[in-house]
Image (cartoon, rainbow, N blue to C red; front, side, top):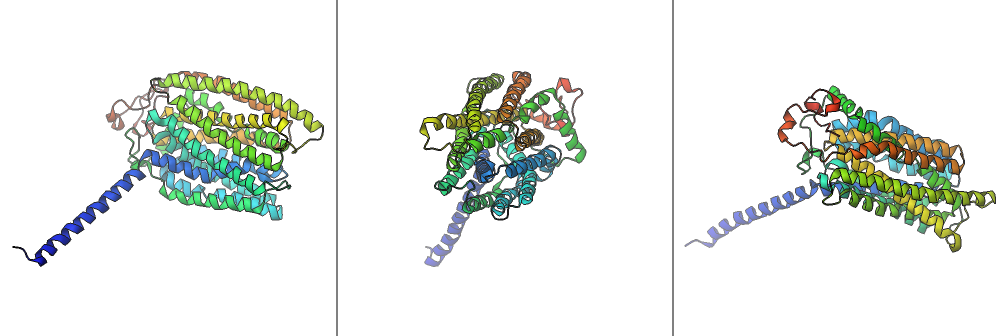
Amino acid sequence: MSTPNQELQGTVPDTEAQDATTSRDLRSTLSRCYTHPWFQIILIGIICFCCPGMYNALGGLGGSGQVDSTVAANASVALLSATAASALFFVGPIFDLIGPRWCWFIGGWTYALYSGALLCYNHTANAGFVIGAGAILGIGASFLWISQGAIMTTYVPEWQKGRAIAAFWIIFNLGGSVGSFVSLGLNFHSKAGTVTNSTYIAFIVIMAFGWFLGVFICPPSAVRTPQLEVETEKHSLAATCRIWVRTMIHWRVACMLPMFFCANVFYSYQQNSVNGKTFTLRTRSLNGALYWFAQIFGGLFIGLILDLPRVSRPTRARIGWAVLFVTGMAIWGGGYAFQLWENRRLAGGHKQDLDLDDSAIVVGPIFLYIFYGMYDALWQGYCYWIIGATSNATAVAAVLVGAYKTFQATGGAMAWRINALNSPALTQLGMNWGLSMGSLVIALPMAWTVSVTSTHPDPAAQDTKLDLDPDLGPEGKNVEQHVQKL
């Protein structure tokens, strides 16, 4: 018969073993959640909610909440020029070396800096600081968006990529929508043309919190997605350059570039010429909220179309293209009718005076602005999906997202500069309409030839030579195996 002491000695180790097992199970559960692809998609959406989402809320006010939109327009030119110069040629290769988490820490803080510069401008009218902060933000944004794009387009299985884009777009654009509603509440009774200091302070706090969340970004090597192609060794500079070149010289990528160029080209016209010159401050705040809120539905709509069950990927690519073309013609056509009407109002001395109280005439322009926001989501969602349909390798995705951000920023910088020079609004609208529809025509061969899958049929191909594409010539080497048949 055992004594009470012996029983106690036998019980303590058993209890400790159970506690240790429970602790290991908890750590294992947390690890599985942390490395789950959808946790990372939601996380990057929340981070972008806090940083570029709040930046979008500022831009949606027209002139970033200032009476004179010229400073904000010039800051946007500096921002987009810096992004164009850095995203494709520098940040993409750096991403390949250090991964998404460190890229985010390098770039994320610049969003709070830009909001701080606008707060400073409220007191000092220091335009140089705002423009300089915009340029720094342009480099920081390159690090953020290349990390975001690589995560969103490669971390989930191919058949879920449309939904991943939709989920990200919903969370991200809630940032712009919520930020604009916050601005509306803070400025509802304001008769001034400039937003209050508390508005900028609120944006700074939220952006800083988003930067902190970057600590939870998971590297590709730890993500639990079977199809995700992760390099076990770091590429040499020469190998990285070969991947870059072989990706960029393909004819299908060349067909994508005009669409990338047009992805932000209409922001300056919509935010400054339509929202900024037509409506009162509180109505501009409401419009900004509705613009970004409409993107939620646009992102959800295009995501569901691009993930239609029992429809092949090539067919989905063609359906998505058709949706962009038809809705684009309808929305820009409505914008043309609005601009003719608005030009007559401006000629009569009516500027920034259309208010919520003017229910007889305000409803139509507000709905047009909502459709502008929805179309932006359709366009960018399709671009990201095409990138995701090109390859499952993060190295290739980083190159393509870098190209996307470079050409997107180049087009945006051009448009913001044209806006800052006070070009006629009707000219800007015609440019946006023509470029958008023209780039879709150029992209049609690419959309028509999307492959059924980007997944290697044989896992052993990871360690052998792989015929990249008959059009590209001889067989590729190991470091180039990630450039899939486009």
